[in-house]
Structure formats: structure tokens, C-alpha cells
Length: 494
Image 1 (cartoon, rainbow, N blue to C red):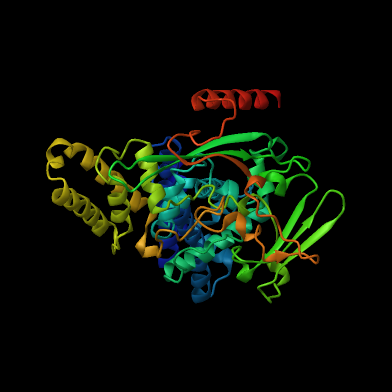
Image 2 (cartoon, helix red, strand yellow; image 1 turned 30 degrees about the vertical axis):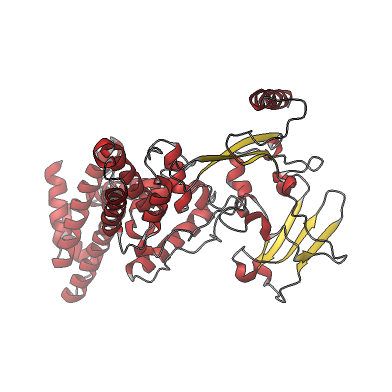
């Protein structure tokens, strides 16, 4: 049997093109099956190996299949023979003689065609599966997507595949995504992509098809206690606490943060240059059938019809996955986690200054942060270098990691390039709409009262509840315990 197929392959190699085609088909088929086995068993998971095995090899396989008939066509034209005469010359008359099972050559062609189709189907399915993996999305176009890949791996959605949000469901969505991918490959090949990658992402699927697959809008109720810790610029980097009772309700009756996506509530808006930062107008449809339209009296702009958007989760949770930090936030997070020792004098001030200095690349940043922090303590606290050398080295390492996580000069991505719109600490956030410039026909503006979204239980206080006024209660710790108990009971009743 093997000799028969070897003879068939030799006869198929009719000229140089045919021989090249046969070599390509045979070699790429063997290599593809080996790479496929290595990928399925977990021996090889590298994205670049995947590009070769699931994209390059199948493309060369198809090219080889095309070269074989081209070679035959050229030879037939040059020899002036009919196709049957050429087939008989190459394979022999006995291969064309009819038998009860058909001509031997036809049977061989059917078997080889079936094998080829099987390989192409497996390659297509495996290729699509491979390209749907986060590792492919984040590392195949390493330079372009590396910033997003770095922060994705440390995000709350690190176990959610990229395609769950960036690719829709169904054949049409996959075709659109692959066509968009071809455009991105073109931009990356010719180095014409935008730096930084623009935001917002207009091709992102609606939140009801993504976020709400896991997050249940009807269950947005009750309050959530949140304590935010900030550290001072004094020598002790003294912690100060802000405690908020966030009203996460999503019901029409109770209001709250998620009222904007409550059932039968629809909020539409148009923003300046479609950047979702400066609102031209905001329109609200309420369950009772009334509609209010708030127009920005400082702007005289008319948006395009395609720039009008219905509000959903990502209008506030715009950095739900690709979360970038501010310099101060990066330092305070690592202090809170113990990666930066607060006992180092003035460490908060020194660390933020080191991060905010200008560095041309990551290597320069590593050197600059290390030398800047060390030189400060060498000048001002020389005795510390011996006693707390390890703590200082750990702090420098944490700062170097924070810089490389958040700053990518080759993509023009620096501190504050991608601010969070959730709340109002890094950007206008809530106040994009909740401000006194957006007014309706009666001159009423969208309320900017702080208590719409949260109750302030402590602000810049020495403890989470230490600046609360507690009538009839002298001990703030007991008040805190009672408050937490009431919150627990309220949540349990819901």
C-alpha cells in the first residue's frame, strides 16, 4: 500500500511547481500534526509556535495543493496533450481501467482528497480555538498589545477570555472579528497603528451581552461599605481613612448608583467628539413614561446620529479589566499590601516622586528609580541603609514593577492616559453628567448631590469611623461594630 501511494506521489510531481507543491503538502501536513499533538498535550503553548502551526503551516499546505494542478496545467499546455493522455502517460493505463470498485486512480484521489479535507478542517477548528485564547491576543502582537496584556493578567477578569467581551456570538460576529484582525495585522505590519490605542472601544459588545452574563442587574441592591486608605507626605506616611456606604441599588424606587441601568430606565447621551468625556446632551426615559432632556448650555454642537449612545455598564466601568493606576494609587496599593514598608521615612513622598520622573524606556526607569530612592536615603538617612537595606530594596523593586506595569513609552502610554470613569477621583467621572451645565427646559440640572451615590461615614480621618458624630455614644469603636452589624442584618434580609 505504501509503495502504491509513493508511486502516486511521484507521478503527481509533474514538473518543478508540482514537485514544490508535493513537498509543501507532505511536509506541512506532518509538521502540523506534530504541532497539534504538542499543543493538545500542553508540551508547546507559545503564541508564536501557535502562529506557525495554526496559521502559517495551513497556508503553506493550501499553497502546495494549488501548485500541483498549476503544474499539471502548464505541462499539458506545453506538451499539447489532453488531460487523459497526460494522466495515462504519468500513471499508466492500468490506473484508468474500470473495476467493480471504480478506476484505481479515482479511488486514490478520493482517499487523498478526504485526508486533505480532514487536515484543513482540523487546522481551521484548531486555528480558531487557538486565536480565541488570551495568550494569543496578548502576546502574538507583542509590542502593540503588551500593555493591555500586562494589566489584564492582574485584573479582576484575568480568568475571562478576551473574546468573551471583544467578540460577539455567532458566525457573523466571528467573521467580523477575523476581518478586523486582518486590518490590525496590516496596521502592525506597516507600523501605522495609533499610539496609544484609542479608547473608548467602539466595537465592544453591549454590556447586556458581556457584563450581564455574570453580573445580574436585578440583584444590584443594598449598600456596600468601602474604606479607602490614603497615606500622607509626612515622615511617617500617616494613613488617613475615608469610609463610604455605597448605594449600589439598581431599582427605580430606591435609586442608587445602578439606577442608570434599572429596568425601564433608559439613559442616552451624545458626547463631544464621541469621546464620552464632555456631554452635549443627556436624555432620560423614566418608567412613568416621562422623558427629560438636559442640554449643555456651554456647548453649541450637534452630534452625528451614530454618536448617540445608550448608557450601559462600561460608561462608568470603562477600566473593568485593563486597569491602569495613578502614581499615588500605585504607591498606596503597594504600601497597603506591605510591599513598601511604611516605616521608611517619607517613603510615600519619595516613591511618588520616583515614579513621576521622566524615563525614556523601562531600563532607564529601573535604573532611575533605584538610584533616585537610594540617593535620597543616602543623603537624608544614611544610618537607614544598613539597618533597613532589605526593606529599601523591596520598596525599589515594587516601584520598578509599578512603573513597568503602567507606563509604556513605545506606545505613548504614560500615567493618566487611560483614567477610570468610575467615581470621580481620576477624572470627572460622575460629574460628566451630574453637573450644573446640563439643564432641561425648566432650567433644572442633573443633581450633583454626593448622597445620591454614597453616604460619607468618614473622610480623611485617623480611623475608618473616627470622625463620625455619634449622638449618645462616646466610643467610636462600638459605633463601628454596631454599624457593621446593622449592615449585615440589612443584607441578610435582602
